[in-house]
Image (cartoon, rainbow, N blue to C red; front, side, top):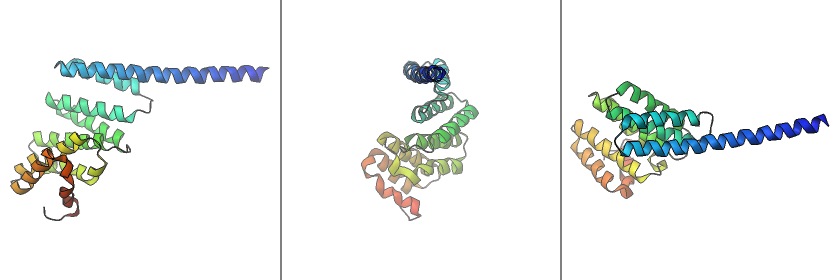
Length: 192
């Protein structure tokens, strides 16, 4: 009798914990949508607060894709408002969270954020280093806009290095993300 009672308690606890996890996940999604709206309304301080609340709700869940996306959005907001060191920290978090995801869009975004950080600090060599990182896994970036952004940032970095030929090639690839494969030669060290 006692085993049956303990089993029923265990099952109820397990069901209860599962529903709490779904509650937190659903609440996180709702807060995320509110944060996006605050961003669209150009209310960055509220968006930042909401994004941080979403991250608290996601703590202990297995939603790495959303978590990485939020860290990237936070980094972008902080960088846009000249809070550079905190932006760097959030991009670093995005990097850690997105490292093992099959879609490398968030990983690319994090590297580009780090590149922008160095670009804004007038450190062109470091900016180029981080902007080039996504080339190593470009074929694993599912988001076409992200692939285009990789080339757009590279175009700016190459222009700053006075490498106008590469800047123009990257600019063309950014405008036509379908034909991005011709720039993969950069990975192998061949001249473009």
